[in-house]
Length: 167
Image (cartoon, rainbow, N blue to C red; front, side, top):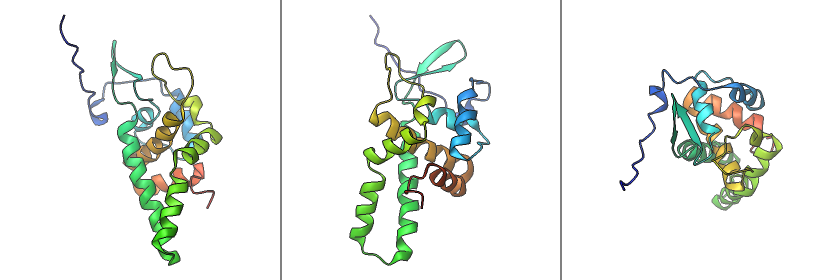
């Protein structure tokens, strides 16, 4: 018996011949308030960890939206700190804001309130979007918007989803 090796997914920029069904991404763009120039960024953001990414005739399994979630998490921190800094408030205020706004509980609520769960491609065998998956999805769509259109695009998504409480 040979050990199974995982073939790494090609970078999103190398998927020139990949043509997934983007119906869900187009509907999701309306919720996000942003139209992606490269819809594969959003497609990746909507893949739960362990879900199959079909490239040609064979599905490949990857990290889903985890990589984009890392970027989105950092962008949320940056946007929040840029909004906090001019207030002159102490660091403790920022830490409290950050803990509340970027908490799994809050990000899950944001994703659920905006209906993002209906667009998530779940891993085989999964039937519901878990808190962890919803949190990663919210972070990932922010990261996808940033990669697609820069900070301005990420800000549009954050405002549309009202991640900072509609501010």
